[in-house]
Length: 114
Length: 114
Image 1 (spheres, helix red, strand yellow):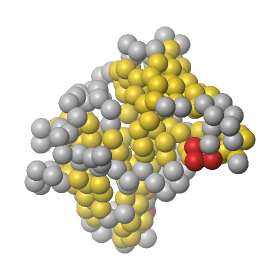
Image 2 (tube, chains in turn brown, purple; image 1 turned 180 degrees about the horizontal axis):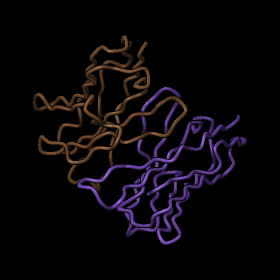
Image 3 (cartoon, one colour; image 1 turned 120 degrees about the horizontal axis):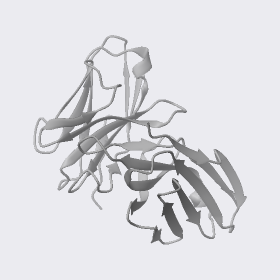
Image 4 (cartoon, chains in turn cyan, blue; image 1 turned 90 degrees about the vertical axis):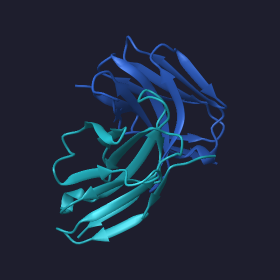
């Protein structure tokens, strides 16, 4: 069964460093998302992406964040200068036809900022 | 602003019991509602998606209902098993925005004891 994959599973970085989180969405899906979950908190929406551009972003997704689909399979989230409060589990998700369809989530990348 | 609440926060039941998990949302203007399962330190597994025009969806031992007008959904698990132990999240996709994002509840942590 097709699934969303994410790498790495765990990333440790120093405050102020740049990190890139990678995702491979399900191959025929057209809509891509990033969410995050701080330990013990709700899952929060960050950004949605369609047709090579951001279609929606939350207040969390400030200038420190960017997303890119560098090729036909990968979808990346970049954090330019990490802060301690960026420590969280980051989930990538994708959906097939329209944003109203079921979203399928990857296993997540645990980001730890020291 | 859409808020999603899940009650109870935690639930412990003996194996074989039927159980109901509750989800409520403050704004009935939703496209759909999705139930997920999250195992500790893992990603989100989609269980059921109910469109706003539907009343319920079934998959195996799971049945989810939706009452949009009252802002409620329930997830019914029949004949619970220890393998059902996980955190169950509900999320609504709101109207507005371009592709819409999922707004999550904090989850119900279910423990099924042998």
